[in-house]
Figure 1: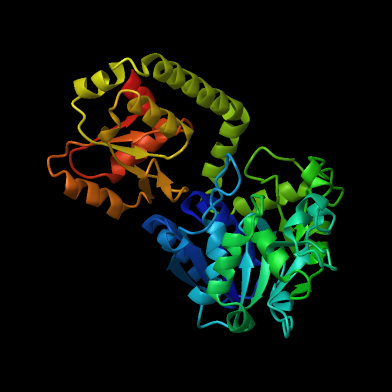
Figure 2: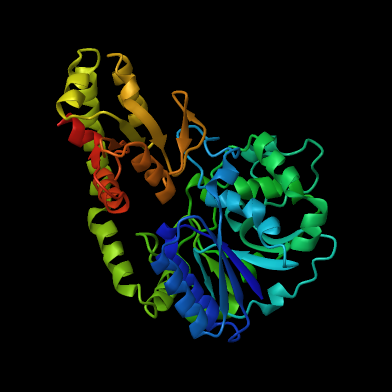
Length: 427
């Protein structure tokens, strides 16, 4: 069976738990895993290789170049940024040209049994197989229907967390150019953009309907769009294993502080058999004990920075601070609202020329006329080559986890350099 996942390094631990369940409950040596990613570390790859080989399976890592997705609507929804990984899925038929079929899985799932019955399903005449979405009542929500063709007759709404691809049919009928164009022109206003795009394009008659209770059992499925969750499950872990081959933890991940039901505990049983168990326990404890304080810290950070920026704006003091520090060139890390406010404050003092570049992992396009670049190792090497004397500063502008980002950058950037948060600079 060919299995595909699209994931980033942040989700490595949860991916490992999903693979633990997948490999335990399927025949040894029966799986070839394809990992589509843009930022996996050597350590990430070694961990996945180790568990895959332990069960006699094989894994292939496919690097997805972020530049290929610069035309995708990452900022389609005001105030949010879509994950680039959801757009990797649009290229699955192209980056897996050797395959005729692949089963794509989200990482927030538990596999309780063999997937062979699902994988062997006949996909003749359809491009995908998916289960109706339990958390929307299996029907396209009325608020979504404006995105669909007016002559639509079938309103089944499919969840794409578990998606079986007829790659040969897909390549023959829906080439990348068509899919990318549709992604660019469809004005879909939901974070699950890729899911809605597939529903709009193929949900009428090109998706084979799967049994959602067997192949995509969403544990919080009751009226999820209105915030009403069905989380008081009566099933025991044994019943969950026997009735639901795939359990999907949509909207309430077990590694968070979500609902403490039997399906939640089932995920932790698999987690306990992974090398990440201690880290996952520690992570959850921190979320329970300090989760709200992180939001409070972010708000306090924003308040401090905004107060200082507003006070300094137009006084000439901001440029004086920059000069006093000996800063000659500033590279912004983060192209969000805090970066915009900082740049506006510089403009008020005709000091915007200090900003020599902008980098962001999630945003693409332009920032104040400058092209937003992806902050990979090569990008920082280019900066260092540009300023051989090391006289440049990377300014971390996000308010959330700014200090953590700063420490990460200090480890990644070689040679003489200065990395500051906005708060550092203004202090």
